[in-house]
Image 1 (tube, rainbow, N blue to C red):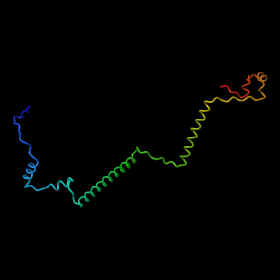
Image 2: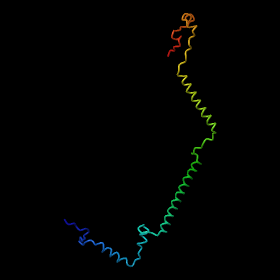
Image 3: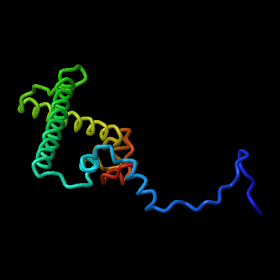
Image 4: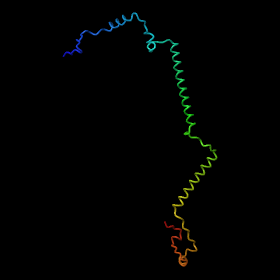
Length: 158
């Protein structure tokens, strides 16, 4: 199957030009132009540059990096100073150590007092123990009291 011609042009059946013919054509066309190949290729890094040029560029790169690092450090320090001067920064409390210690002890004592009060509220009160001279059930019944033998021994009803 033969391809159809595009745009009404006939298909050329000439072989592709060889590389040496292209190179010769390029050289022939450049004969009157100055040659910048070495300087361009040197700038692109394909050719060796002079040692002094390499040293100067290396020093300039390190100076640029140092200036950039110093500028970043100045920006961070300035940001910290501006934040600390603003209203949202937390200020340390100017409390002496002994006052802070006293306050802490006072707060802990109040917390312990609250725990003791809660325990007193949830535990039932102690019943007084019966005295041995009133442990006689006959005397207790005459006095209007009813003592059970368990209560006389310190038994608590829960």
